[in-house]
Amino acid sequence: MIGKVFKAYDVRAIHPRPLSEKVAWQVGHGAATHLMNEARKAGRLDPMGRAVVVGRDMRTSSPSLSASLIDGLRDAGATVIDIGLVDTPAVSFAINRYDTAGGIQVTASHNPAAYNGFKISGIDARPVGTGTGLEEVKRLSAMADRQRTPSRDTPVEHRDPWPEYRDFLLDRLDERIRSGSRRLRIAVDASNGMAGAMIPAVFGDVPGLDLVSINFDMPGTFVHDPNPLVEANLAQVREAVVAEKADFGVCFDGDADRCMVVDEQGRSVGCDLLLAWMVGPVLAAHRGASIVYDLRSSRAVREAIEQGGGTPVESRVGHVFMKAALRESGAPIGGELSGHFYFQDHFGTDSGARAFIEVCNLLAGGGTVSEAIASHDRYARSGEINFEVESVEDALSEVDRKFGDHEVSRLDGVSHDLGEWWSNVRPSNTEPLLRLNVEAVDEATLKQALDGFVEMFGTPVDH
Image (cartoon, rainbow, N blue to C red):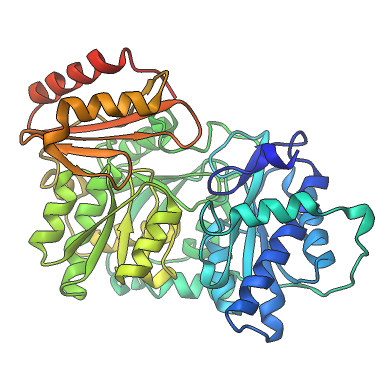
């Protein structure tokens, strides 16, 4: 079963098959061995170099999977700090606050209710994914045998991270909002996920925030899938923004590490354009800093960074690559189209709460979301389009034959710039698909470019 549950960036599958409590124990044992080995390599011989933080989301399978995971961690010799029901960014906070060897969140993020999984992080909350240790965790987990492993009575400490976590986050919220001298009305869709716990615990009594709550109950099932990237899942928050005359709306995913923003007119805001808006104040506070963005982002992001005197840093798609780029460049902020926003002051990790704070801060001095975004919304964009192909390699070779003279980079797939339009074509990590993003100076040019790709690859597919 182990081979069926390990994905590119985490462990995720349907519970109880193939993701069973037995598999959870194996993953705990393998993860503990890996995390403690890495801590020793880093010179962490102190007791906290053997400690692992464990949190969990609200899914009905999370308590039993968490318990089995903890048993596996302990049987491998790790001590455990159990922080209970939390959003995923709280695990990143706790790893750094308690200075542990790493942490694991029991969650399936935006997947439907039948799924669950484990997000594993190491020292400083650095991600454990493909290329950063997940293959080793998989190997160790496959070798772990509970029948042949003696139980160890290592400690389990239960801690409540919420008071410190709340203070940590609110320190980053504009004083005008904290004091109530600037008030914002915000529609918040928690998607029946962990934002239903996080938002009241952190922001519930902030004088300047008037929150309209949507789907804050956490029954372990969902009114809509907890995936804010799907436009249909934003329907409730869009309607609430208009009906309640809110300043903006936000929809979180299941584990609240990412979010989507809706403007005061009920229109969803592209995450790349949201990052472009964030860039100005960030560069005013960090002159000449680098800003990280994923290579699918609008050219408007790079232009905003350059206009602000910063250094654009393009990254491959995926949180493992984004977090690495943020650390290597020292960037104060980064963002990708999937709704993940990364902050140096949140340990270089992604946080839905921190992104929510950033939008509040941007409005603290007045103005509207739509006006701010309009200044960056100057290109026609395709969004991500998927094509099913017989051979990814042959398809990419065809793109090279047609546009090779205009190649920009091969950071992730291949990017081309033909002057009036530009594109990125990259292979899926898990399926025989090509993922295409095209941007152009206007809609007519965009259509012409897309017609050329359809001619090469055939009709797009829904994925």
